[in-house]
Amino acid sequence: MERVPILKIGDILLVSIQVDMSDQTAVALQEDLAERIVATGCHGVIIDITALDIVDSFVGRMLSTIASISRVLDAETVVVGMRPAVAITLVELGLSLNGIRTALNVERGMELIAIDRADDRDEPDDDPVPEPTASP
Amino acid sequence: MTSGVDLGRPQAQTVGSDEDVVRVRQLVRTVAVAVRLSLVDQTKVVTAASELARNTLVYGGGGTVEVAAVDNGRRPGIRIVFADTGPGIADLDLALTDGYTTGGGLGLGLSGARRLVDEFDIQTAPGQGTRITITKWSR
Image (cartoon, chains in turn brown, blue):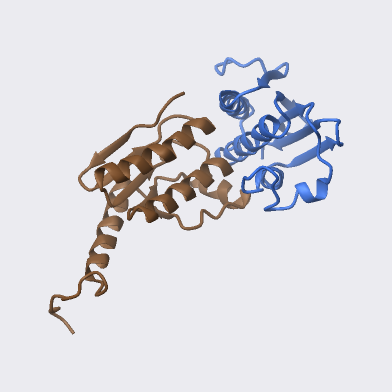
């Protein structure tokens, strides 16, 4: 069985799916990612599906599950690079990809995760003595 | 022909494992390109084939898939037959309902696949296996 490589770039895990995954490979990726999130303490996961020419209900469910698992492990998932034909097909198939954040490319995905982490730090719940803000 | 596929006769693929579902997708894609389906229609028919081939494996206990280039006199197209000798489907209307599943999936395979193609025919009965034929015509 093929395995999809997971790269660590700074505080982000990057998964670029380059093969037509069998269902087993997809399930293995889910498990590998969960382990890597815990092992590295990364707070962001980017899944690049630029090379995928279809996303069926199985892979769609895998993406949703990865997003849910990541969230429980304090990491945010962004799916990037979806092809237009894939998006059209997904909608017609009836898959809404609930809970999945998307961005057009890896760069925008990284920006999204950075903004999220900044927002989290600003939340008073996480920080009992908030820094005074410059603007009202 | 550059595709390397003999369009004159159907291509068969047995479905007995996960990897075979991947092979079905690749075979369907090759024929869909050869009959000049648009990119969106290629994506739709390959996605539908992926759903149905997985059903053949998971619910039918494996089977065969046949892929053929067809022509209705006006347009070329692709026709795919998924056949298994599994338990069949007792309540077809229910099985074709969005969100209904007996296998722990999303319940979109059968209903979703039907939306993605132009023609969808299903022959099934309890104990008699399932045979699904789908067709997508080029526009």
